[in-house]
Image 1 (cartoon, rainbow, N blue to C red):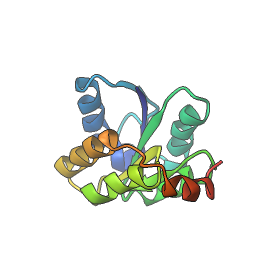
Image 2: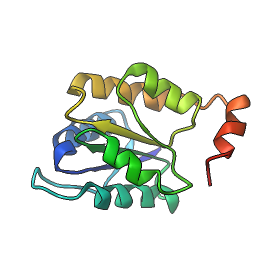
Image 3: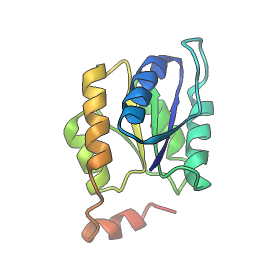
Length: 142
């Protein structure tokens, strides 16, 4: 599976750690930036990331900023995107099982590296449960 990664300056270092983990785990990664800790605007990188999902180039995405909030707000402007700002193992699992999230948003200033990698692992292995959740997802998805 191909996964798109994007981050602003606040999420750059965590993005690099997640990229290394994904590559080691044999995922194909598309990194849309940013490429340093120099200040940038998170909406630019959220848009680059979700475009890869909307156009079918990538199946899932991970977007990282300081809190994950800005990335999730920007990503969720698109009806095809179901971005979840996760901060625990439980929220990661439920975002996939109940909401069929196709974008994981993380806050690099809110969670530490180890928790972030655990969240990514759980998010990637969790699957949409369908059933009653499908009806609900259809009400807000494009």
